[in-house]
Amino acid sequence: MLEGKSKLRVRLGEIAREAGFAAVGVARADAAPKTVARLRQWLAEGAHGDMIWMEENEARRGSPSGLWPEVRSVISLVMSYAPGRDPLALAGRPERGRISVYAQGADYHDVVKKALKRVARWLVEEAPSAVKVFVDTAPVMEKPLAEAAGLGWQGKHTNLVSRADGSWLFLGAIYSTLELGPDLGPDAAHETRCGSCTACLDACPTNAFPAPFQLDARRCISYLTIEHKGPIPEEFRAAIGNRIYGCDDCLAVCPWNRFADAARANKAFLPRAELAAPALADLLALDDASFRTLFAGSPIKRIGRGRMVRNAAIAAGNSKRAELAPVLRGLIGDEDEVVAEAARWALGQLTCG
Figure 1 (cartoon, helix red, strand yellow):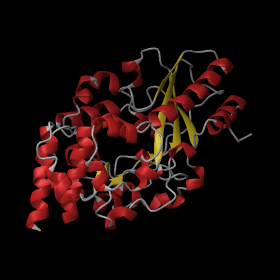
Figure 2: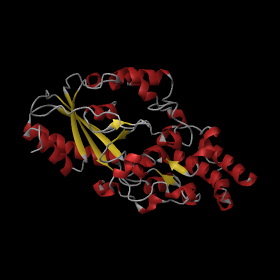
Figure 3: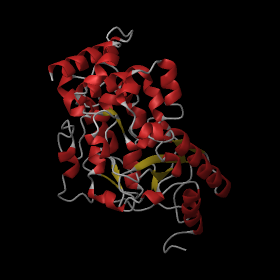
Figure 4: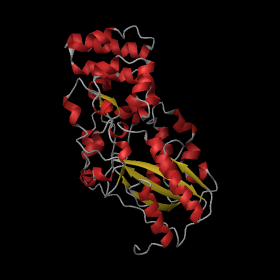
């Protein structure tokens, strides 16, 4: 038995690992009291862009009890998707689209939620209580809760960083009515270990970090290529390069990722061959049906064909590959005006180069 850990707590860790998680921690439901004020300030600055649901759910998102008044403890879990190859390898392949590592395999919503339910069922059997499970589908601030539970800290890039698994992590939470005590915890909160390092801030192609530990989503490539529905502002288009879904740069350069072992990653997130390095020409040719087929079982499916083809068109314009011009011309009259505008811009980039 681990020193200081009860049999229940030790077994919780074993069950979590069997379910595919890399680590588990426990915290009081009110263990991250500064979250509300920080969220409110971030929203007031408009840094969330057009993610309006962040505003609409502010009260519930700020604290676990705002979402579920009966909650007494939060079990935070992390699942690794550490890549087995250089996540920046496609930077020099402009004819290929770069998809963020986390989205090259199975949809994490499905994988993590299934694993969370397995752990939650065990917990209810061992310690009768009411529980709710969450994985990025409800107003839950997973990162400060995971920090409070000792799983890592929010780095200067605002993502969770673990000393054992770096920052290639999916986060999940189990809210429980269990009162914390000798049997379950809580665990000690984790201190920040970024030191003077600014690698993640320096690597950002669009300067999306106004200061350490602060993110302006409106400038973030992940936000622009995934959450943003309209035309991508022209000031960011060149910096996007061939990134067509998300961006890994700030994570990829983090020194703590030298401890991220791909062998500890959940095998469900191994990259699918067709998503590891897709050809821009193929993506530009997608219609709704072929988009749904290609991205079935992937988190990418939720952005729809329009945003994906828009992103591919921006990447095509940045590629300077004249052979992409014919397929771009075919998109000038696309029924989705956002796609059509991106195609016109891309053609202009190819012809003026």
